[in-house]
Length: 319
Picture 1 (tube, helix red, strand yellow):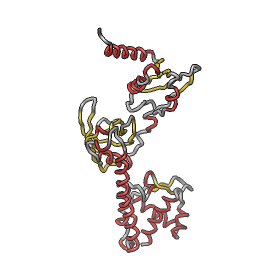
Picture 2: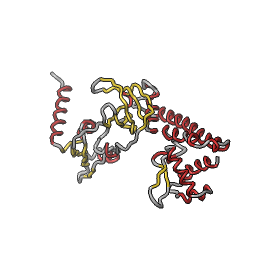
Picture 3: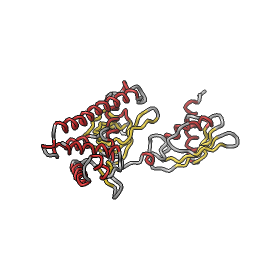
């Protein structure tokens, strides 16, 4: 009984005092350092990831287990459940069972609360349209839970460009808002690459028991030269001159990239940015009409001139 209580105490102490040393654990638990080392070995056998980074640096949890008892994933939860199996029957007294069951009950209650928070969060998010208009109201909740808990999903997804619907496994790394819509950035097992998925194109989502880590992606680097959502493989340096009429509005906008803004002597604004794709940026420029002039690259001046000519032809009054 005492050993089980001590094991729970050790977990609590390492959580609240990362870097705590064996000598300090022994003092608080009123036992010897040798006993503490044996206890730590037992916890290791139970797959509870405690790390010692070297002499004099003490013990801490590896990764997300440091949040114990809050926010366990299922692997960590199942590892902790093994403790009674690994301990001799004589240690599993009434006092131990009481302490152990309190911890497990706390996890269960927090899991229910977590689902409620995710559900409430999903209800207030606008997916470019009201949440109630989504085909399946549970899709956003499931994806949000999978992102937070790092669970792989199996999804039925419609690719608009090919007008094709496929089933695929995805590790959903991030859920990001863009242009009044939500997008999932994740690893697609089908394509063996990181892809961006539009939320309202998911037709069905199931959360799998498989877990993942986010060590394959640095989101800031991944989106470094992406204007909005479309991520290309180009390197285009744009220079755009905005008229003084709208310069102050451009300066207060928040961009996903980091443009260089230079105020010109005549009150106009020079906007410079490097992007990996042109489509979304050109669409944004065009909404400002004659108040935005593309200076470079010259090729894009020609493209825009041709597009304007086509527009004029459409609206030209034929007498």
